[in-house]
Image (tube, rainbow, N blue to C red; front, side, top):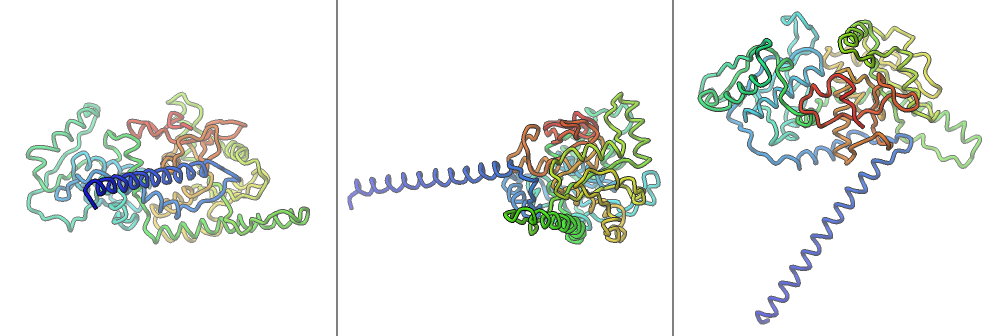
Length: 449
């Protein structure tokens, strides 16, 4: 074969390969588009298991990790992380992002299993990897933030103690400048920078909402806790399936052509019901200080608004995530719309699962149960509710869904403290454009759809 023929053959093969490449790219684009369209369709708020979705999200997270620049020979140490589950998650993420800014690996911090706001000496420490998967976190957040163990230290240099400032004169700008100075020069030469003083939840916030969401995505519960949540969710769906099967049997008696769906997984609604006395006192004071009257909600208001979400009378379990002080309050279980079946952990018969664990783990189980719900309803001034919606919003964004106001979506969320359409609660997706987490923590400004 002469050179001319070889050249023609080479060009022909190159064109064919180029065409094949374009075809492959087109097919991938088509699959992604169809997946987004299918997820937008919402017939009877059908169920997609989070375990299957997590496989997709994990792959997506890994593909989005480009930066390999986090140093693994320089570390940041922070004080014990304290208070409630969601305050601890925020504090942990803030510590991670501070370490990222300093281009350092965060030494695995100690969390708090108990809940004591004033008696710090009574806080029961618990290792991070007893709650969340250490290796999974580093795998999902690779290149963005990094966790290290104390056993990784070489102890070749001394520890530099970095004192966090406090008081009104210690402004956001001053705090950032302090961090920048610590990222260079003689301070940065130390193997470990140890921040002393306030716990990370009380640090100034310099990081955008999207960065927090990125860290939260990497927090995966250890199998022991996740399996406890599995038991609760399974019990909820079993009860829903049982009631739906009874309804379908009656319907089939009237219509022989009715197709049975009793073998499908029954959907459920989770409501984070904040009506306990200490919350009502807190929210009333907050309303007075802020001049906003859309913070507190009575039991009756919550029940009525949740009832206006679902038009179908197919039996649906409503899981009520409530404080233990309300477990003996029968009034939270009465007055619900026909077709809605309210259950809290005691009526559900799973309170024994919770009692085996300390406060932090109990909260983590409830958080997971609410996160997996087909519909979630919470209070936009609650940190617990806000973080659940933030994570649900991020999952939907990963699937190509960026708004929910005028369309039906899977895994919708609502704020019962704000009146929405048809006297129901306001549809709720987190406003991911916030420059700090404070932008979504308290108030209706956190809500977009």
